[in-house]
Length: 321
Image (cartoon, rainbow, N blue to C red; front, top):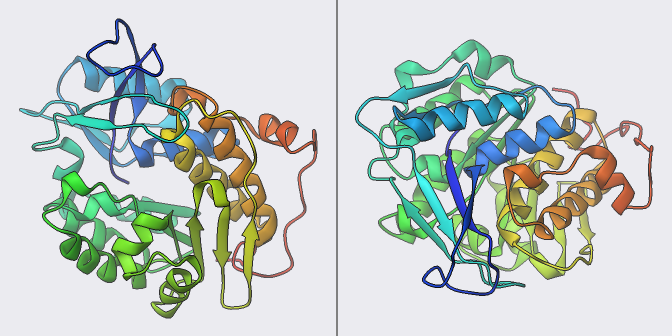
């Protein structure tokens, strides 16, 4: 549930937008990318979002269908424009983003009275984002969706903090504090955890998340890998070395792979390893949704072609709903 739009990414790497001469058009928006990534691993995925009543909105729906993502919960909002995001690509770690058409963004106009409560409650995994909490009516709708969900199965908050969508960091932290007790897992990078719980120390951030009721806290640390904490243990997964082209979609690839591991019932370590590798693959590519890897591609990077791990006996990544 949440953000969707169209990514306009430059074909030229290492130059500013003022010097770029050609672009590619791609499906975008963090939770939408996560749904595409999960579908690439064979999962049945749908997105609850809104688009403008315009040609780019029609492009979004066609792209979702092409990726095998159900669009029955995607509606057009008259009088709004489908958001567009441009970026600059300066590998390995500088990828400025420029958002257009988000005032108001159709995906922030989802109302609580529009929710398909049966679909939300019945999904094996439900994923929401911090961005969905930044404005009304999406804020109330997102919190209501989480209450309807009632922490069934796997309920995940992607912290997904975009400073330009918020009035202040304090406001973002206050809304995160409302959402975190309603989910079973949360994931984000160090900056996002700092906004949500007040520290960028990965161990302390994870501990504060668990204290708020999380079963699983995922702290992505870029070149330092990822930390996954549960009440029982802390697992640290080292990074997968790749030549970075565009790091913007790596977190969403990680998220879709995390969904796959949770739904498959893998152990925490296996899930983190698989998701880390999926993120690394997308960091080595230009696009986001179009770049999401298949399970076979991730296994090849890990040197494990054809292998699917058995479900874990216990642990948050393997617990039954």
